[in-house]
Amino acid sequence: MRFKWTSRLFFGLALSTSHLAYSEEGCRKGDSCTMVVYSEQSDKWQVINKSRAERPFSPFSTYKIPNTLILLEKNKINTKATYQVDTSQYPPKKWWPAKWQEEDIKLRDAFSYSVLPLYQTWTKTLSKPEIKTFLSQFNYGNQDITGPLDSFWLNSSMQISAFEQVDFLHRLDNKTLGLSAHTYQTFDAIFLQETSPEHTLFAKTGTGPIAKKTYVGWYVGKVKNAQGTHYFAFNMYAPTFNDMVKVRVKKAKATLRELGVL
Image 1 (tube, rainbow, N blue to C red):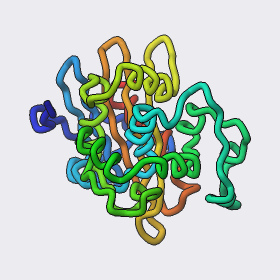
Image 2: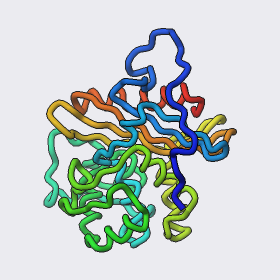
Image 3: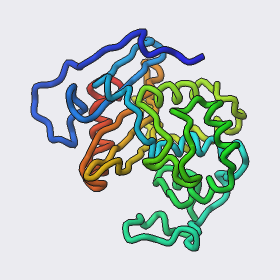
Image 4: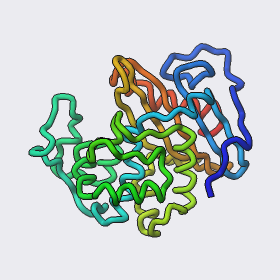
């Protein structure tokens, strides 16, 4: 059953008055950003900029979460194999990271480094009816895959809000998406980003242009700590890709720290 995010909403924060650099301070009320956190054990919601949290955006590479689940469930990919981008289908571009051009990319790295051409190739091994069935099963965003098969999640038909991201992550963690135990277990290891004595962080980034000089950047996932599990979704604007990459994760983590999650 989908939970409702209207039960407990906490808007705004008690923020430090000390000046912080842009990349080190969290999302503020009124800024072009949003953060949604749902703490399961306490049933507590913390939301910054609610109207933006309700607004759907292209998921960009955060779509690799449901996409990886589908591909694992259909046995199209696995953690034991290594992969290489098919450059006949997707010729290398100057901006490609070096990781994308390696000859032995593991699935976990393809996910973490957002190796788009690999995911595009893998997605084309699925049919649209197959994908649509899974996304309906997942109740993921607007479930609209009318865009191109290998890019409907890239500023195209697929859209999802920060609230919907958190809802999906919560149901994924509670294993209610109708997938096999093996898929859930395998994906959790792929999703893991960092561990410390205080917390475990699972997360995925996503970034892309939605208009001229307007990039949207995502950071979504969950944090497990002594207080339980906290599901989060953050997004923000930046004028360029490079600007976004410099601040996206730092700003999201700063917000999670201010909210007492990290």
